[in-house]
Image (cartoon, rainbow, N blue to C red; front, side):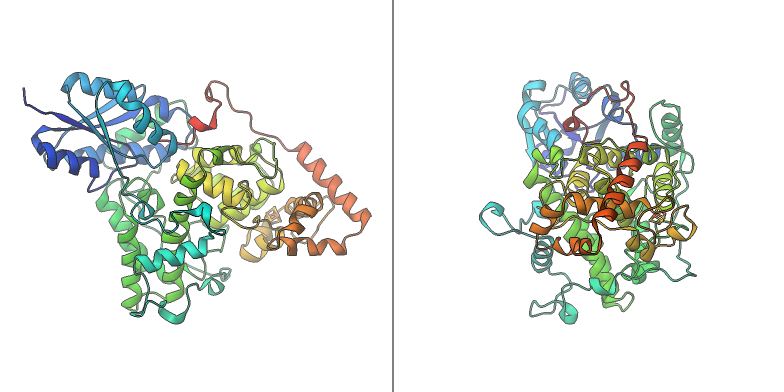
Length: 530
Ligand code: SF4
């Protein structure tokens, strides 16, 4: 039997080309003594009724990663077990390893388990290596947040740009003279437009097997049919190249646009690959920056895209670790309603929600502004519990993991964290949706009417929210403006708004989870999926 056998456990969202646990284990013990294990946990996959394409992506990418490692000469176990610990026991029974190496999970509960419980559960020394999937794990721009003033996303973004030397002149000032070109990036789409579609990837034999397995499982949303995402690093790189070549140039102006025709528009759709380790942040932003220097993409598009990656994405992860574990139950607006059923079944006469929810249920995707201004905006105005909204995101979106959903949905979209992520609630009436999309043109409701049988629910819910929370909104200098419009609404009109909002919310159907599907009621154990 070989001596000094050690094991490396790799989580399903850690499919990195250079996994630090492999690197360290190999340096210390030699490749021939390293045993790698990946575990497909039925317990974890069954925590929520996940969108089926999301599960196909994760499982197929894991299995392709195993092949990649085996081709590189590693001994790898791919184990299907009830849970992670059962899978690890199975692996250790076979290999009798002397030590286990892991990379710190990106999510709270799993990292806690790795750091506090794993060694005891396995009766084995465990070395937890720093996570290399996020830039803020290498450079924390604000290591003492409690001592300073409110650290907003824009400041974070500029600090990150300075540190990683992105879009900067030699003297450290931003290229073009400005840090942010957001004011150029709020265009609705022209009436006629044609976007080069993102590349589709024909499923290979391994992916087809996963699709069959996922289709056969009772638990899940939507269909595995039509799955065409990349499942390898090579495929993800092709998706990146395609975006840079064909859609980056127009990404900026239309990044907040929405359309009945499609959701992806000029968006990169690279987040599912980044979030499981097939693409890495710096490679992506360097590719975008190089496109600008080649004259291939406009500055406002490249700056806007880089801000999404190293500003928004990294800020979400940074905030997650600042605010956990309290973030999962943060609920500043004391919202208590369950998730409206229309998001889970796509059945509603509200055209925008109909389009967005059906797309998400079918494909696992809608663009970021639909997530914020259609889904979260509605739920915030309707008083839906932020944890219920987060659960819907985690189940349905193909790129949704706890570290991004909790800050983005509970913090940013639902403003549940008291303004630590977004300094004001993102709320809007139908006016915004009408301006930025064509949803309202073919809707049963009228975006122009505030009350009455044909009035858009966003309208009376918006005004109702302002009436109910007037004092609190006024107290915040950033949201005080919202309530100014209330000066023009008299007492009788206020009453009508409140009555219609109440009637609508009372008549709305709400999601009641199947008790079998949600045996574990604690969101704390449901914010992750690997
Ligand atoms: Fe959505 Fe209201 Fe517009 Fe209909 S009218 S699409 S419900 S915003």
